[in-house]
Image (cartoon, rainbow, N blue to C red; front, side, top):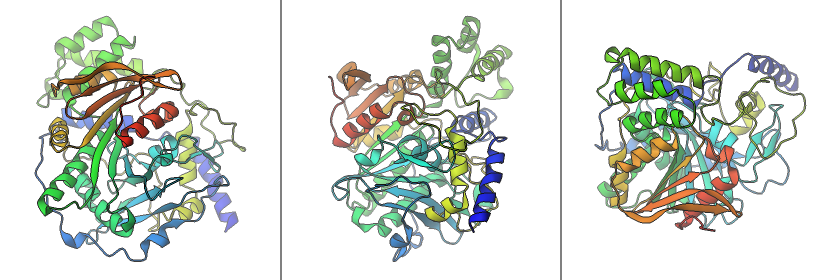
Length: 489
């Protein structure tokens, strides 16, 4: 067995050196391209598709089977419980979602439950959220060793990571057409069914305060799931899921302002020429009705220049180094407080190792493709509303806590985009724009609007805020969960 695992790992090491894996940025770029080609339904929807009760199954015996005894390469003295496994969301279709759950380090009985979703669409919350951002471990450069993340969010909450929709990471379907029918609607419905089943499997969290968090295209996933929860609670006249609030970071919220703000960010950060910036403002139409067929050449040329200027750098963090040495190392490199730009490769190697998958209770059906950080098998997306702003308004009207944060060195869904999008709400101020602090340093800037909506920047953070500024991210999530304003000093 050990010999087989070693051979598999060596082959994987060779493969990693030749592979460039898709990222959230690539998935989002593809989505916008499909929208401009009119291949996606961009109409806003808020109708409720009532869940068929037969999709909520018995969960007896599953919880203890999902308990992870120890992950390969895990450090010693881990003092919290870990679980991983599958939850069936559609038994007839053979559709099941993979989850990874880390209970809080201390006082798990009283701490809230926090769900984290990554975006894409089509990217894994295990790849990014769990292994590179806010999870308890990170993968070392040998692709085999884990080391502790001292800023893990399970210091303040019980944290649940979900790979969705089917076809993402270890989540799968036995019905091929599911992969062609993927979209916002199906993802939101399946995520809700997942939660109902998961809470049945872990009944001690059934009445716990529950929050949903995420980044990037989870700017759609999070509000859409929250909408399903709020709507079902009202329909059933009971609190099926005790949702208290949502928090989204560098989030896709409103197409027109998201794209407009991105090109403005490029220009204000010396990534786009004056001429191309003026061309974008004058000739580019980012409205839902715009198509590539009618796009003026001046707009196309300006966008091409932007692409050419951005390609050599990491658009996720325009000041961060890029990965040049893609090989795994024989021994783990010494870790520092900064993220290794080649981490994607280390995580890929680790999660494709057979003994790791066994420990995680993952890939039980022996998928005929590798685990990937962003899906290669989801190639179409049926629906993606051009805005989720009405959902944010719905949550405020229903008394939910709503926070939006933005790493200020992200170029993909930058702070300019988020500010333009939130300004569409036309909310009156509750607390004026001001700096917030961590350890005597400015952590970012924040403004609070009436209706319990808080916007906060995170200074020096890229798209994946907990990756680039872990101390500030942990402070942010702690104050969000506590329902307190960010510290002024």
